[in-house]
Length: 289
Length: 163
Ligand code: FES
Ligand code: FES
Picture 1: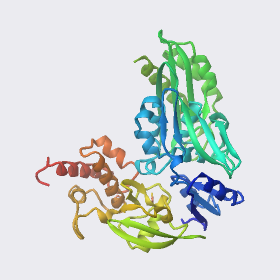
Picture 2 (picture 1 turned 120 degrees about the horizontal axis):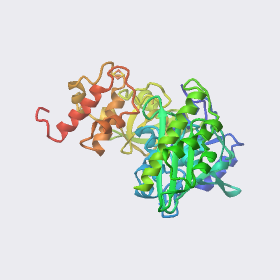
Picture 3 (picture 1 turned 60 degrees about the vertical axis):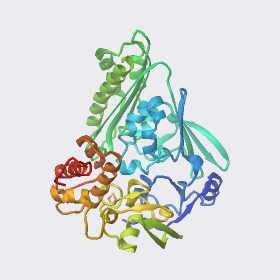
């Protein structure tokens, strides 16, 4: 498999990126880590006339973490995010998910922003962005905008980004208080694409009562989704097994999974409910500890 | 299609070439430089046979274009042996434990294991399995590969005097 012909340009800075994108009549693609884009190119599922390389742009990589949020330059490598002390401390849910993104060789090239922009339904980083209500920054020659994660994904492999925009930053807010996290995924082989992945973050008060919860499901529907009904039912409970099981009945009813060669919709639904129960319990135990 | 003049250091030697934009790094290594030790299987990032060390980290060379490697430093499987025709301790351990049959996956496995041992000199079985999780082997069942990496770790840390 060989990619169709294209022109390649290494951008020196963001203005260079905008100039190149604006000049390509919507036919340009940005390459960062290339771990999703190159397979699409060699299978000729994507046929851009121009590939714009943003790897050399210093302002697009880097991690800033504090008590309020963790911000990544879009081209920050997944391995650097996985190994950053600030991520472990302030975004433990993201760290758990990053350990399951691809393989060592793909994490060494793959980027945080590239995973978001390519929007594979099974991608862990997009699931965490949706679960934690991350804010995504995109810029173009016309200026910049902030996009909430729940408005970012429009379908499998598609987002609200225009062909002239470059994803520049993503910020994961940090929750105050006693917080616990859980992440689980099911795949055919270790580190393979998730058939279903579930992420959960909870906050509890001194009495162990849940004051806040985010429960996200990836790989099931074309875009990562939140189990909002289940979340509402769990707030105010002590997150005991009976509370969890009762709340997850609503997830089984509302989730509308994909059916494909890897797994049926029904299988994905059952797995999602099981994994959700596990992640809520482990998030609870972590918050209590 | 644009073409690009690149300078790449591979196994300590500097190579200069002009490459078309769509040429992948693995095709450049194998077809242009005749460094055929690096294998190519799936060509889309699934099998790991094309693994190389790029700027000190293992990556898949089918998921990069050669034009992107300008200025980079690379080690391929040819660069692991101490001298032409010789074997590194890791390579010799693969031989010792029967960690290869057809040999298709072997260059990628060696790179993945080499990268692991540079980072973690005495890895656990779990760490070894994680390090090679992106490399498919259709022959061995992986057990002997894990054994080989363990043996190499023992030999390199001086624990196994038979090494
Ligand atoms: S040839 Fe590169 S991963 Fe298969
Ligand atoms: S030895 Fe044949 S694929 Fe691994």
